[in-house]
Length: 153
Length: 153
Image (cartoon, rainbow over all chains, first blue to last red; front, side, top):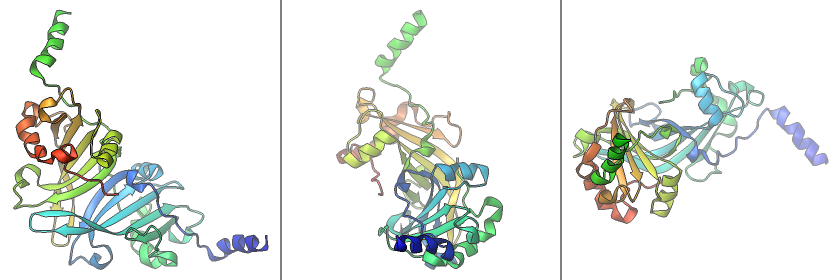
């Protein structure tokens, strides 16, 4: 009981709650895709082809421009296997997640951010660095509740 | 009644049943994507970025390698808006459909094929030409029930 008490105290003190791996996102709605190619300033971090997926709350949010608690967007980043005439999907580089919970993630626009390495589903690439690693860029999108993507009907 | 009788007679005589526009496919499962670039032999027909979507029966089929009646796959073909460092989605070129109904489409592997121009949802690009326009290529994929795509988990 003492340990549980310490644990419950820990969350508000640190203001940090881990984001879960977004199980089932491959059946969520595909929002859009984009390829980031060599030469782009984000190539080292996000080079390859990425697909954006939205759960039901996030799809409603994309239509409203404002997201309710529980809204979750995934960026599924794959290597781009490219030759002169075709660009195809290669291995997975990461599964990046943004999850809306206004109370838990006040410092980063109400969104928690995480990314899971390749197909690991476990190895976290962001952890406590969301403000610098993710929100620094997303902060520019305040008008759309910090989301870059728009839904292609 | 006479007209209806003539109409009902018409279908078995011609062996041709139109494929419906796949309403709701944007919420189906996204299977995979690929870009066909200038220089590819299929560029004139299918140049751009395409996304493949599967309804529930087709998703089950992708996993089994064999498709039940009702399985429907969509190829959503968009222009590729490309510069040196980014490839993004442009306007829609076509929504192509393959729909499994073994009795209706015996001549083309049990699949009916159609494509709808751009965002029209109505303007048909294939009609009665499925054998030459679609199945000629798909026929090479007999081992996977005439489907080219594999599901990226």
